[in-house]
Image (cartoon, rainbow, N blue to C red):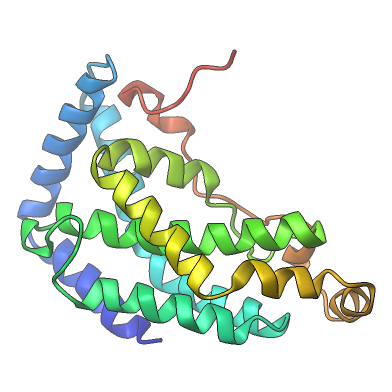
Length: 213
């Protein structure tokens, strides 16, 4: 997994002075679609969230590979990471890479949604979290930022990758009593609950958080 190249792609984009302007423009449009009129602070917080989301990708891909390897899912996670890496490197994306920072949002979402899908399947079968970060809330926000029709295509891509890699069946095998004893003996801190999550509470002013019922 060449996370160094992914990091280089992200770093080059952040070095482009146009990136900050493009993020503000995007967030204004997204917020208005959700009935919000954000001020400068809300836009800055939204931009910070997107940058943090992108910056976390190489780190979390490395954590995902290590965590999956430790519980016997090395082959399955390798197939998914190969898909993720290919998506970052190749030009045939849902959102073209030529669109600057816009063109990286789908790459990052594809990466993060894939990792969360693996962790969710693992938790459903074992009752334990596979990775230290719960990406659910952050992915839901990014889903709204990217919007349709792109997110439907991205979610289908992730689902196909998970199915093709055989993650569901592999995790079910791990849920056997014998495997559970082994997993318990090799447990890491995040097997029993996520350590952290990307904060999203500051994004309310952008209309990106669902109101509690």
